[in-house]
Length: 327
Image (tube, rainbow, N blue to C red; front, top):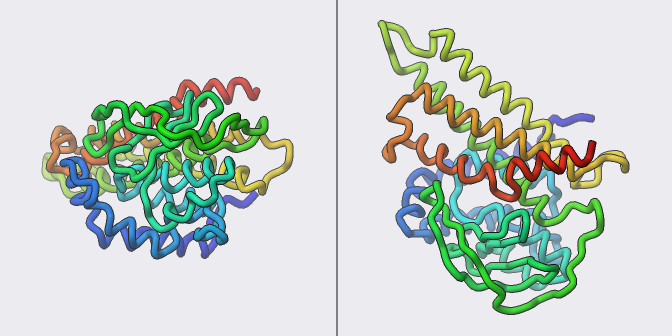
């Protein structure tokens, strides 16, 4: 099986990267953390114009009609820049959840860039960045509802909040996913895995650049073998996790043999990507030292976001248990 990206995927990644690079995302992340979620609105509008916000929404309802492979390519670029807000929920979870439950008329605003958040029992019972969303959906006890925010708490990531939500308006009762089918929560886990890959890549880049410029004993610290080995371990972890993410995306798109356990593949991708990104955060901080954790340095934006997302859309323990159950 070929996991190499096609020219179409490379062009998609370049488009998203160009939009986010031009936007100066570190400044937007800091504004979001300071209580200004509208700071990211112009970027979201540009992504919507490029068809990114409605990537997996079908053409009939205003989307691009793309697949999960395109979704993970996009999510990795969003992670490279650390785009704040309920981006995974808007890009992956809500479109899948609403389409699966027949709520297609609610997809149009999402494709146009309206941010939404979701909470799904077991996998993500609290809604991320619900205060920055125009709509919050809750799937609990087999019932899909529009939810209201009950309470909100800060997370380790200053640019991310988590909210407990309660039922406001019931939309669909007796929601039941077929056994073995990829659910909205699974798609959230896979998109989060891709986002974490992007975060890990950015932290590796920041650490490598610092290692080349910082000097000790008259030499760049990147010339020391211990530093090289730390960064090489990160590069290997990221490169080993990326094919797992791409393979799981192919599975979710139905492009694998029928006997493939796609859900276990998604869990493997989430675990590997989370471990790789967390390793990147630890090693980058070791290379940069205390300056890397200061609010003034961009590395801190990605360190805290990584820690917050390791347990998003399924904890490592939950996903490891699913892999174990599949063996």
